Image (cartoon, rainbow, N blue to C red; front, side, top):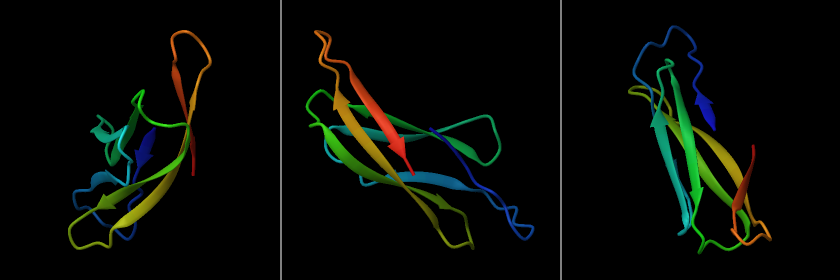
Amino acid sequence: VPVKAFRLGGFNGVISYAVTGAPVGLDAAMMSTARPDSSTLVLVAQSTLANGSYRVVVTGRAPGATDQTLPVAVTVNTAPSATRATGIALRR
C-alpha cells in the first residue's frame, strides 16, 4: 500500500515511517521506495491469523515536527479453496 507525506510550510527535513499495532500473525513493515517522501506498507497474513478485522497505524516522523498518524483497517478472509489463499482488504 503506497504511503506519501506532503510537505507544508517549506519543511525540508528527513521523513521516516513506522508501522505499529499489528496482531501476532499479521506481519507489517514499511519498505522504502525511490520516490521522495514515499514508502510502501507491506502486509502479510500468516495462516495462523484468524479471519477478522484488524487495525495498524502508520506513523510519519521528522525531526522538529509533530508525528502524523494514519490508521489502516485490515480485513482478513481465508478463501475456501484447497490452497487456502488469504486475501487482505484495506480501508482508511
